[in-house]
Length: 504
Ligand code: UN1
Image (cartoon, rainbow, N blue to C red; front, top):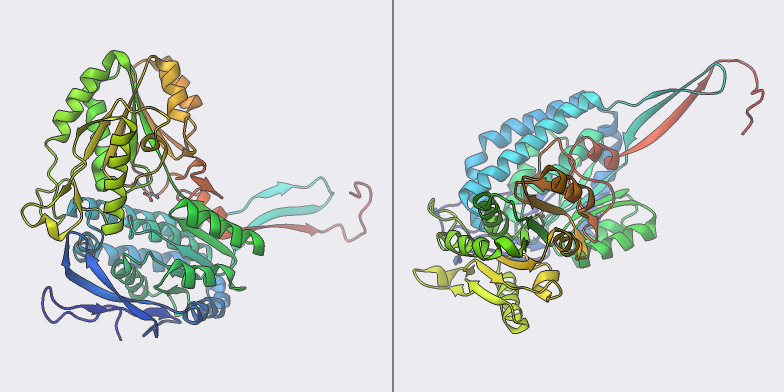
């Protein structure tokens, strides 16, 4: 069995996916779940298994069995395998982008961008393989040589969401592999085909059997089993708060490391002196790019009264130009919601906003004309005169909905921007240097942008949030390695005699 059975016809062929355990693709005994294109649900891309707990456990066993061999592989050699994966992903980028668009719905341009980011991440961590350095630290003990060394944490679990189904798995798997960890990867149930291709790319690059294992299935059966499995020494999760906090609890009960990257309710703050064209463009990119289905999406525009009318007017005009449709069509700016449930959530929030008394400036309806009824399309929505306490200003929607909150002055803007349980990213638009630094200093967010959108992240730059957004160490950048390794301190005493003094 191959991960992706060759389709016999262009569109009708349904690819049957298996799990990848101990270096081989294995059929699952679990129920089969159809993998649908959210832009056109008459297209079934694949069927993937809802794997059993026993299958998840066997993936953990495989990761445990492969660990000794992988940790003994010199780090630069591990890095070379990653460079091969980078090349392979570059070679397969068109194919992967089309699968990503068909499976998740984002536009082809967004898919290619995501794959570019993933290849950058692999490249960066491949390089880190030659820099897994420690420190030498002078001990206060005489004739003692003290140094630190980073050792692999062990087999780790990687549990990922559907919205960036290439980049997020890669930004967890690449640092784990370079660190010498073996991996059990549980992708989101909505994007199994993308996950299978990623694993195939690492396999083609020469990752040895058992070092990277893939198990499809639910959080309840697969995710829980993996986190509770005694071989697993760390868990890296991106997804919803409910699931993340549950995993964090399960990991804490076992005393293992856990990092969770969860929700966002990210503000763009627009001060009186802001360049409004720039601010409008960024608000549109941040709110409606990736159909608003990203944890860094801009979901609140906090605008000082003086410029609010003009901002809303320009925003309305700009949003009216957005083309909603199938992401495979080059003219499309905004793709579908990922599934019916997600679309319904968005439509429900539009309803909630209306009932709460916010003014719906545009959008918010399901779009069905010209064949869009076969998918889950919602017109990008802008609400004005949103109160900071309304549910649409407080709860993560994960869809193309932007709430404009008008405020009297800069000080209220800061209070309102921080008035949320989340703290991932935030933007401030101003040309006043003093105001800029006041906001940079006081915004409660893991990533602050000045005059640029709330979205994005780079391979070599740490990523993550504060408050209810995140627990555990940041991802990406050099700091990512700290999560996937244990720090060992070594003292080498060459006095040849028992310690004198300093006996603490
Ligand atoms: C981005 O804004 O490009 O789940 C990164 C998410 C984030 C990644 C977003 N972890 O949306």
